[in-house]
Length: 243
Ligand code: URA
Image (cartoon, rainbow, N blue to C red):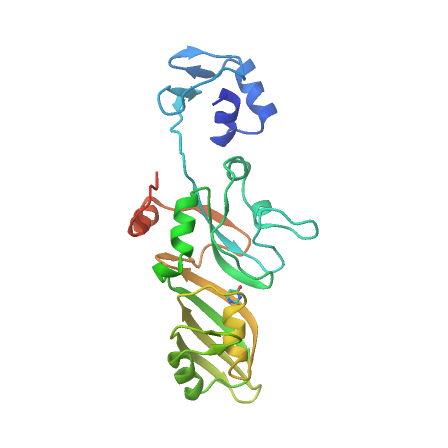
């Protein structure tokens, strides 16, 4: 790939900033100063260093975003802010995309990566990846609803797999409930529709985890971080190339 593309992907700045670094003779390719942005390098063989720091090329990158409400989980949208707007330039250069979707008004954990095989595996119905949600509900969730979830809720033309509904809090005065829901599918508006099938309405939905990945409390809404090495290792179970 071109040297400037490599440097941008490694998060050293925009194309213009990277050109400046090259002009300032701060980039070495296999130990020799390189000033041309357009030379071709082999990112897997050549040693590229900037200010004496050797850059390790990453084929795949993984970002965990705490998605806020009002942002679309897509890579383009004419009218709304998209999740890519919340990441860094390096993520955009690496062409990451969200693994599955959250509704515009749902917040919480969203994994973004440029690893298509991983995304495919995690979204495959055959893998039964568990997703944990916390929902605020208008109405009182009862033990009967818990059983209904366990039995498999009927939606239009589709029976949901058994799902786990846990009642966390019930407010009789305000007629509201706080629940946790675990599903292993990902149908359109699934959680909201399952709650609706019990005659109640979700007023706030947050995703807490997806498979082995969990939202950490320190990750403020609208912020992101790279997955840790441990978390990347935990994705091995999907049987695809990760590095
Ligand atoms: N279920 C929903 O209804 N919405 C989401 O965003 C995710 C799961």
